[in-house]
Image (spheres, one colour):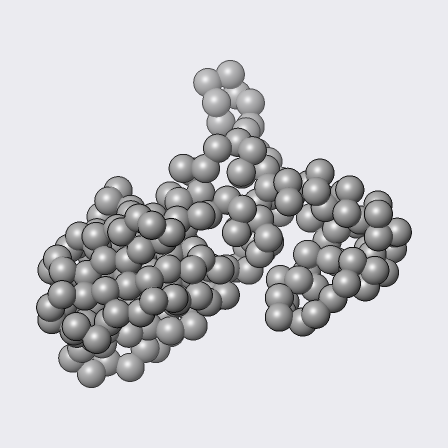
Length: 216
């Protein structure tokens, strides 16, 4: 209760779900050199020492030791390593964030130095995996807590317009079916006429609504 005795309570529509799909640790070597990596899932990277970097566009980002890095889904990047580096990683599906909006709002890897606790927790998980532990319910829940908290930090960096794209009212409107279809499997070919049939409108109207809502 506030000082005046008023209750501050709000209804919440929680449609987000973070699903941990892979946990691992290994030693990066000179072979960690890839020209083009792209996946529909989010990645978390944590290294014990310097020497690895990733490139998005023309910009290289060094993966500093002890810092948690978040690589958004659908982001194309390259990687390189100059030595033997202990590397812990996590892959997650983030359900509830429309794929088209993710590609619009998250255009580069993100360093999260403020996620100190989450980095230390992922480091502990990596050490347990290196010692032979098999991920069980407790480890998966700990990893998901790391993902939830660090993803929330990444979202707070976005501007108001970007946040509106990721949590808009139209997610429950005519575009909801179209976005769910595209997000479920972006590789399925579909024309504007096919998508308009899902939305229950004409192709021209769908294009206008889509551009107005997503800015693309």
